[in-house]
Image (cartoon, rainbow, N blue to C red; front, top):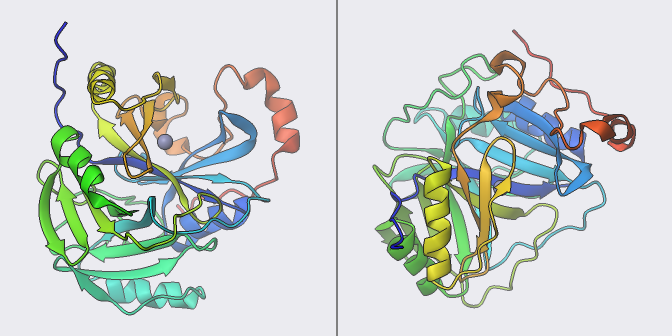
Length: 321
Ligand code: ZN
């Protein structure tokens, strides 16, 4: 049977990173950056560990940064063959507000730089994970979290993009452009920008060629994987066939409850995932209650009491509204 070609992937679905202290991570992303805790659950492959999903008001695809907080995780090493920065999109005039706010919270904020025409500030999260705020030259029409703690004229709208650092950029660029549907839109030195669709914030990724960099080690303060969006399970299965036909070792579909996932390593060694947009986070609790309770999948419900007894206690963000 011929392989039906899915539409190109439609941008970043989520990024998953590794943290140490659960409470510190929760406080930083909700109170300092003003993201919503869109789901509080556990790592399905390691249910003694939380899985936090931060995002916009509904945790829409393209806004979701997720964490496995392992209190005793060793510190990772940022380097090649890794996602080395996560960029959030903020309104054009919000950078001064953010620079002041982040400095007030004791973060080391770098002087703004201009990259591909966008103004950018960068800073590490409490575990050293490199983050960027990008004041895009064009308007970002996404809603963010209108009821969140940061006024909407400054609030994060979702991802702008991410930086992939690889020793050899050629095979990674080829996968992005020849298979996943990205196009090269700009190049500055060793950094190239790729986009899909209209190339809006969240539908971009940058690849940095770093042949002499040390190889990164995935642990605390680094990205574990980056997931790309596909609209439904049918297209996800088509992706699986296409990637396998290109010689990539792709996992079977895994049910992550809020989306379905397949995983594979891109040629530079970075773990990629393709995740479905549906069903989303309102599948097991109402939109207004997202993130207010520990949600477990049905197969872990029988273990709830034991898990709640071993997971570190958390003070959840209280809605200020
Ligand atoms: Zn994932």
